[in-house]
Image 1: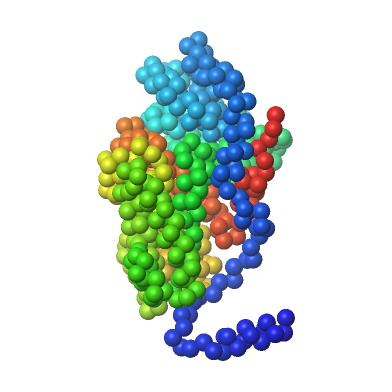
Image 2: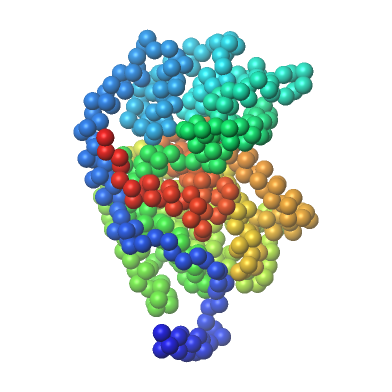
Length: 489
């Protein structure tokens, strides 16, 4: 031990003034053991395939239920809601779409006059989650219009209140009744949660903690991470590639980032020795993927992903230069660059590489056009990260993030800046929700990477920085998703 400490001291003393100086953070030590080193999506797929044959018969039984013309419409919507929340919608996509089309066309708003809160809320959730714009006027009956407040009697219906609360998360801009509802339901659910027992108590606590429609349910998350439906092994490689490259870019010094804005093998000689092995691996992996996709006529997607990586390196370079020169940009200037450093473009473009023929030239052009839903998702990611981490990050580096650039630009104190940024987050969610309502510019399958990435951001950053400090919640999620076996029945 003494020898190691001596060697470390000698190395530190031998540094010259030209060596990169990095802000050092007091990050917690790794919490994962070696099990994750050998964990692959291929393994998960093999495990899941073992159950595929066993579910054939129950799957057909469920399909018959979904298309059953004699089932009550409210019961059918509850069934579709359960299928959605179990992450099984992909198995019955056409059947569900056909049933919802029929039910939405036959819908009569007067039918909701006698319905209870749970029924109305479940109907609203299902239609909105599948892109149908059911009017929020269905909730007007629960307001006392003389006082402008929600009727107190609905608080006795805890199950209905829970569904009502989840419905508020699907609101778009201009739906003031749902803006009021979220405040009302949060206040009253907190009051009653301690009086509940069993599954309902756990359900309410989970809803208050992580917002059902945004948090990834356990089966949905397995499918999201493993992309079980499409080319799992390729996605596994690309996911590792994207995650590794993004995380590594965050650790680089300004001059090293400048080199990474070019994606060519001829930059290898300019790189520091400790970077070369990793860069070589990344380059080789992407080259192999490019060869495979070129044979399939999809090389343009690799180019789009490369461009996104280079833009990200350029965005990080800009932030590094601001910090190096101790310059705090304007809020507008920071956000323009922040759309890039949110990393959304890299992850979304990487996912497009393995989405098959659905990503045609027209779809790729749509992604490149910087649509409203994309911009909202990028802003959501950037601001969410900043609002949650700015205090910790400020301990180790120049404060170049949303909170302090907002304070500087508008001359407001920290608490005002944070509150205004949180309002922006909610408005971005409303824009994302609206972008998923019919008629959509592209199919929902193409919107899914944007929506799911925003859901993951919400899960990680809503209450604290669960990325840097994953001990609460994220450890549990990862364990359930990747380490614990799928239950055998």
